Image 1 (cartoon, one colour):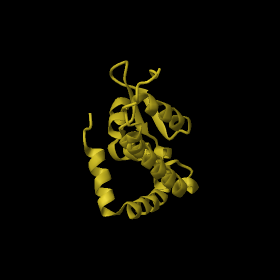
Image 2: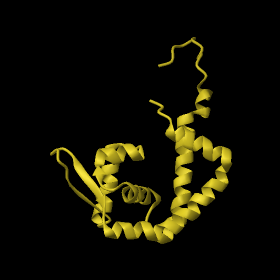
Image 3: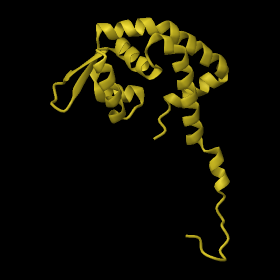
Length: 147
């Protein structure tokens, strides 16, 4: 509660330049752009990313996939449930009873193959919008450990 006769000394206008807000806005805009390109493929950009990483890297524990994707494990698990329901991935118990292993199925590989041309167009579009400097800055930021 504000005290009477005490002037406010904090400049809250500084929050207008919040890096967290700007990065989230940019991420949402980029995701929408990819989704608009990929709409005809029947797969969302976020789903394509998960499937393509499994196709590239092979089966792995859910925790490891979450780390590669930079996602919270619980968020990834919700996404994987949808992919498993479509039979694009399979999830089986790991060696440790607490771990589960996720793998792409033949049907999931087909989704990646069908979606790839749409993803490629989206990738080119975003690269064009970012320019070389923006692309380099985005990749540098993604590679940094900010923790």
